[in-house]
Length: 98
Image (cartoon, rainbow, N blue to C red; front, side, top):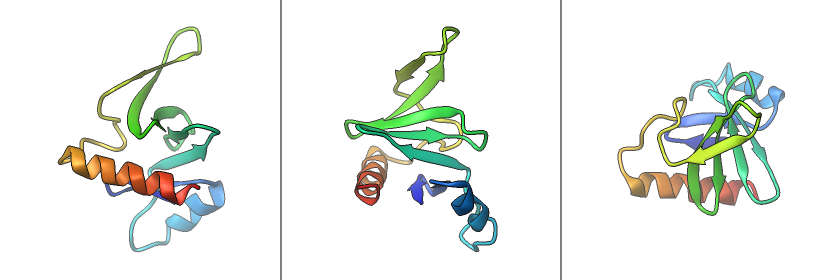
């Protein structure tokens, strides 16, 4: 399970369903570990962000089906209070998925 800005993301459907009964809260989406990045997805498994090269980026799907990556707040994660908090979350996410 990943935590970004105090929002939880599950790796599998089983982990997502298990979060429904946790006192810490329900997951808001999923994540997938790729070869060089981590994809962040919403509850419908649509890609909304990515962690790559120690940066959390917003993913926007284009008309041709490809993704445009940019800096910006991801809706389901929200804005961080500080850049340091964001960097620490990214570091924890990368360490937990090794």
